Image (tube, rainbow, N blue to C red; front, side, top):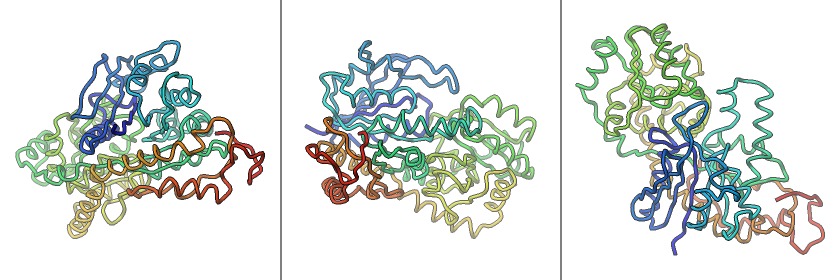
Length: 464
């Protein structure tokens, strides 16, 4: 029987971005590799969507989110708690996966705690993986404001109400992983693996400029043949630091225009700000669902502007690099996994610095040519085939090593230990060392407590 993995996320709807793109790529890769993959997401109604010959998406009827971005729906504990025996509970019982991955820090991650305790009966104890595609402390700051209390609460929540529920953690960048490592308590030590997202590099590289399409965009923003089009593509949400776009365009000369592709709770605010700060120079296109239209838009613009200094990874900026579109971005956050001074225009996240970087893109053709060549090469290293193969190789290693790991043993409490460095390799796509090496290395270093032993080499008591 082929290995079957089951993935659960709330960050998925018809117009959602990076996480939806990632899991779609994973389902297509599962079919290519001849293995089974299941994805469970909230939806308007319950239905099953087959993807290829081995992929399947369970859309589970769920209520809309009550705050923040109401386009999202939420799987709640009622869908899996034992007293309710909800739809997610039934899916787990029917599918019986070899590995369960949860990409959610708010309402579904509690499921992992139930599974660790064996509270869902007649279900094989599979490895439990927490997939982190964002940082909680950044989200708290974006939606509730910057405060010491918010940072302390995020750290406490991550350390006691998220990290211990899983056996393993995967983060989409070293920046995202840093929150996990910083919040981790010694008694709840967990391996943290870094695995990046990807890009359809060939599709974006093949995009070609449409002169008519570009003329239309220029005309809609009141420009002429000298006009330079700056593009932002992404969600219009507080965590994206959209005020920086308005600060930048307000400081740029009249030849620059800003084109915004995306939708979200700040769409109305952005439209009003554009009328005040740059009247007639900002064009809001809304969400673009047609892929061919999006590819053409990348090709028709002169630079891609990404304003978020707290970006967990950033698929859209990577797409811009693949398309040969100059990237202007902050010199901070998860996009530094692939963006640097050799392939992008990095700047301090303020209006003046971003405006200067946008001018540099236009005013230095030699530097632009060199950086774009390097950017295309970089993007090809993150092709979805390479990235998804890396994920599945890691899943297989975790499934293989799990029976002999401390997480599969429930009759003793292993000593507290730091996470060995071999688990943490930011920026690497290849798989980790063999699982047997991990176990032997932990025993050699004294991290392992024999179930029958009355003491341990560390002499301390911890929790699994």
